Length: 112
Image 1 (cartoon, rainbow, N blue to C red):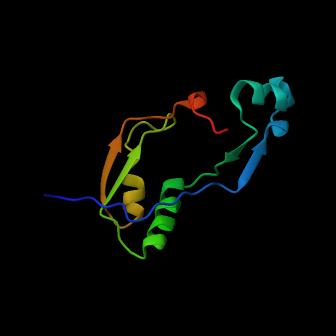
Image 2 (cartoon, rainbow, N blue to C red):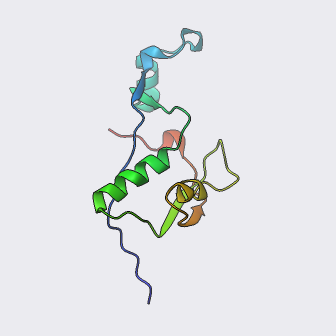
């Protein structure tokens, strides 16, 4: 029997924030309009790079292990193909990679 063990978990959040008041005036929205409809007060702006790889490196640091056996990822609307999992897997030394088709659900989920 094969057993999978989750030994560490981490995340990576881009440092740049964009508040509702920073949205373009041409869009015709303000902070109250956005908050009423979505509950969102600010969002993070991701510069070009690999957020998954940064999060994986942090998770490995938590575990104290230098290697990972496999990477599981989901697709993104901006890049449905090729699969996303191989990119961080390659950056982590060539681990096995598996994509799950469970793309973002947008406004459906929000924190309170």
